[in-house]
Image (cartoon, rainbow, N blue to C red; front, side):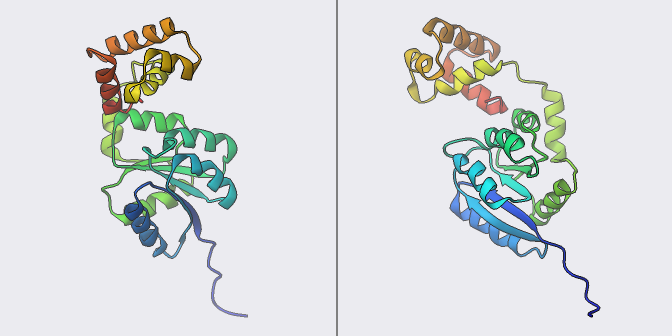
Length: 210
């Protein structure tokens, strides 16, 4: 027999970050924690769910703005397909709308990237223990900002309007009539108090509504 107590299994973490240098640095720093093991790294949002199902991490650490699919949409699917995996959003953009959407998607935590790695490691442990971890300043901002004025469909139409898409393009992509698309765009422009759909999309993104 030995007097040593067996070490508990390390926390298995998946890391989704599109910037290679940032991803590598986070993986290295988290890997230096004795009780944390980075078991998978992905650079695109549409790789997240497959990697989680393959590697079965305890915690998925997700950026929001990723190629292919955003981290918030992936978080929503993980809630359905991998409910045992806790999701922690880590983003450069501390926007109140993003926080609300993350919580609605089932995320257990939301932090911005400018914090120390010790804080991130602590947040990983806390969400695994069942806690909800949210940046305090962002939580206060989200409460004061209130909910998004845009409906889900108005958000869909604004997203589809990016990169110069025409009304016909948007209608085809979302299986809507062109008149319905125009109505949604007009409503979104009015609710964001902007002059056109480009400004409406920019304003919605600034608040984290889309």
